[in-house]
Length: 352
Image 1: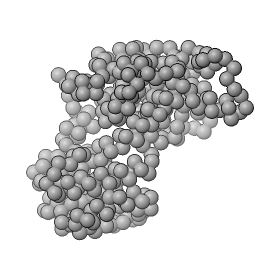
Image 2: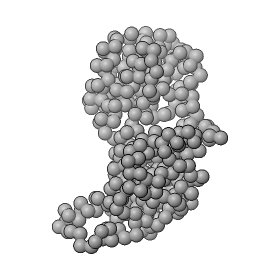
Image 3: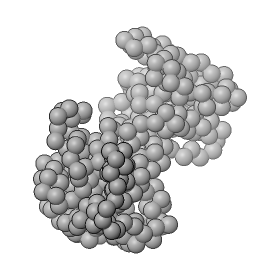
Image 4: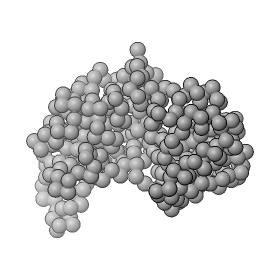
């Protein structure tokens, strides 16, 4: 078996994201690596397109989408698998009907990021519910607790234990599914709004269905947004949803601000009505003097939820593992399908 690998010299090779995956490929077959340099991607793409005509499989470095054309796919007469981390973006370069007809399996390991993002959301939930950062600052500045229990930290807000809390999950995609698994030992009352997920899936994750996002928010002490930005989700956490959150509720955003009506979120935070952990903003980075960077009710982080070397290394390694699986006649974990394309194009219909 021959496998072509296209990596960015600085991002993938320089950071060592390849060091687990490439040895697996080399144990399996003959590997040819093309290294792209910044500013010279065009030449590398041309070489890659030519190489595709001769290989059985291809692995692409994380978050890179080569500008594939119809003739490139059809000219790759031996190609059985094309694997990478493509952020679930297929429009303009992938036609799943064509790939199916050609016998090419597309692997997208974007969901391999799920553990990192879900763990971030879980960590920030605990930070909010105990206000751990504020306690750290208090001690560092020479202060100490002078009042009993939670009254000294943020009166009127959800505070103390996570165990037994009412948690609302906006969306039950891969991030919030993993979050539901992480939170399970805390025996929370977990409810979900996701019209694209069946009752069987809800039962699998031991969560209850809410009838609307507003109803979900109204019943939540902790509200976790795990929705990707798609035509059907832009601004879906709107003013009505945000103002349905009870006073003192906690809001965790680990996906994209594009799904949230940002001004409504800031209004409730400034009014001292909710607290939030936010990893993503619009624009990014926000102005250096933005008020929410320093506000008492905001735990702001600089878009780090999935930004770990281990996460990106895992994405590339999983692409290599799935390429090997397909070439070995086995079932891959991260096969991309036409259903995925429809979901991310906003064309998927809700579950009946």
